[in-house]
Length: 240
Image 1 (spheres, rainbow, N blue to C red):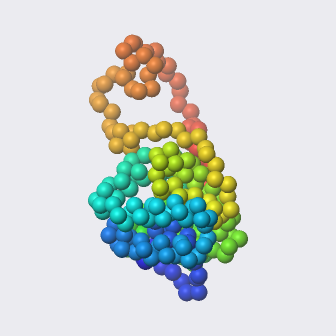
Image 2 (cartoon, rainbow, N blue to C red; image 1 turned 120 degrees about the vertical axis):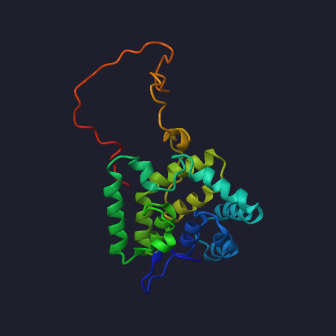
Image 3 (cartoon, rainbow, N blue to C red; image 1 turned 90 degrees about the vertical axis):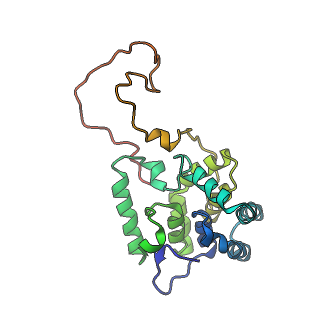
């Protein structure tokens, strides 16, 4: 099993969290080859409830038995085409605001202070707030710090878990297992339906008039108000 980090000696990770981190990673041939190993790790360590383990085994069975192309396509459709299920934690907190950059730097420093460096050759171009990376980092912490860190991101995990349950995805069991390990309540939270990322990033049609989706009466003339620009209000600036 590959690691996202260049690991220093004398670090003993929690194997269950490592397994969960890999289960949330892109299900390419390399990952599919170690799925039986992940299944064994989850069973042997006994870190999650029997009911949760049953759900994780259902996910593992699906990933093993389904056509590889369908597995990969389903993963992309689930995690890469909408913000509600994004595996990038700061996407849920900061969105596209300027606060995301400093938060990313702080997270990298947190990794470095623990003696870990992201390995560019193995992280696959993902950002430091990518949940599989975060879970692997958490797995290197002592038990109390591990639970505290999961507690700090529990609100984000619950949002992702709720969105996955809404989509009836077995991947919800992976996020639920992380919350269980952190001794956090699993709560259903309000999830705002978001449009497909391809649509949200699309360039507006030139000279299309006032036909935006937010217009109350798209077929009628709309009043406008011109005001002097002031300093912008921070967007969703709460820290993770």
